[in-house]
Length: 415
Ligand code: ARG
Image (cartoon, rainbow, N blue to C red):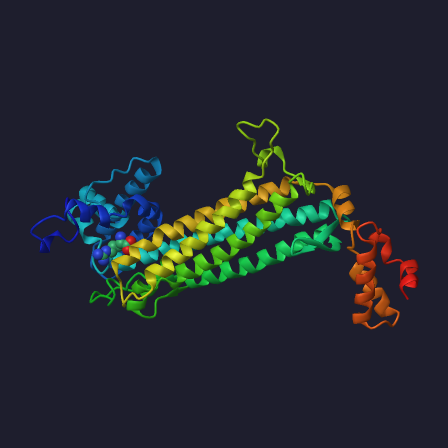
């Protein structure tokens, strides 16, 4: 079979420019597993409806097996006329099985097929990304256990503020990641709806059973409205927004890794496996891992903006613009997955330097708030205590040993 799937109505093939513009196979080929799964479920549906024979179904499944094998081995041959993975697979079945292959697309459109493929793909990837978030939390938790008593300077405005436990600081990131996990779980639920059976957008006159197909494909629910089924991508937006928020959170961790591993801070050292050198400066040990994670957040947030822009103002139901949904979704999933595993590895093996952190935690006026509160306990109104300690800081800092400042002697001196 050559030429586009719609060639019957046309007297000429599409121009080269249009064919090039239309082609998405170079990026949607990665949906082949999902497309084959949908093919099997649809073949069963056609057979249950009496629209193809048992033998046709068996042959279609054998054809799909052969396609799967070819994709697996990297030997699947795309033809110039294959616009996308869906048309490539249908062309393959028709080449292999003739008439039988040409029966597969009854009651189905690429519009309901592509959205169902994407939903299946996303469900699987979200599970992996959620696992990646948990692995990163595990790495943070591991460090809390390794350095249970280590003090660290806590910061606001990147100025030393109050001493805290290092574990308190690390767990702040871990709790934020729990919310990212929640958001991804929500995105999973919204993705977990089958669109197959909506056909182009208005369903089909054929006696097919979308509910059974949805069950066969492992979906928890089936579309309620066929136009919405093919036209909506809010499930993808929800994934992208969860991914963008998670990526921004990772970039904040990355920023701290960059700062903390610098000579100026000296709080931590990356394991050699997660650090990089310089091609010219032999002494350099750089935190590229954290810098790249920080920068990946830019492209993941751009992926969200990309799809928001594509969807804005689209009329119901399917529009070809929707073909532009896949690259941002793939890119965000890939970039977030990489960021998560690299950061989990880097943090799992990072070495903290408790003596240096504690020195920084004890330095300067970090005990000032505690001292003011000690005065409150002694009955001084907080605003007065704050002012008195502030004056003390102005007079003595930075020489005053503030670790000792909260002591009863200092309290007595002030009152
Ligand atoms: N490749 C398209 C996509 O990714 C599916 C094709 C739908 N084409 C069409 N003319 N209705 O959305």
